[in-house]
Image (cartoon, rainbow, N blue to C red; front, top):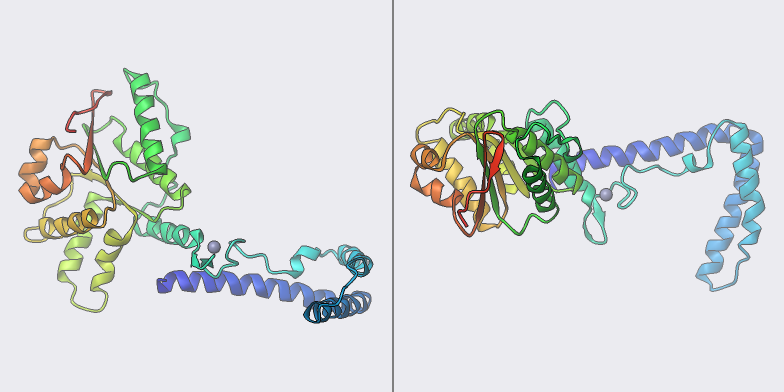
Length: 303
Ligand SMILES: [Zn+2]
């Protein structure tokens, strides 16, 4: 588990536990609560002992003290539930491990952290906000959006998705919807503009300390990588092409999808990034290409 995830989980856990302890401390100042509480606790201990020795225990014995305990807490303006830690993740109780596996909340923490890293300082749009009335052919668009939404729920059927088209046809909007949906599905997803990606690749190239790997790692590690506006970023010689290929190649190898939006035509993608990247991106068995033209959708038949 990454250190930053561990730190966040530990913080959540400690906070929840401290809050519960503070509530109990506050309640124990009250003499009446204190006496009911110690009576209740000794019964709980008795119950635990009986369990160890396989002796029966009448649970009804706990009822009255528990009710008086709750009643007294209410009178003190406190709640019984607040005596137990209220963990952010009820499943793993903020340990990050559930059923011997990494809990879903870990991915959520990573996604939120990545959202911050993406420089996306606004909440991305969701599929529920889609408005098709601006399109000439709303029915086709609706179907397309719905297919993209289902893909987000099972992103295994197609490896990469490329959405090509001029600006103003809602490519970025769709990418944001997919980002929201994937986060909702607790996927470890990284959204980046091609511009930020290209700056980070340059930074990776020129960094020679212990931080080097952490610059590129999120692009390799995330479940789904979303690159918005490919083609608008500056190309750095011996940098952009080299590392973009590295990312695409490793992701292909690990069968981790990439979603890309671009203004470029296929021809221009080839000219700009070269044959190697082109073949990684526009590989018939690995990629689905969609073209949105003039507010209309054409599904380019590349496979
Ligand atoms: Zn959890």
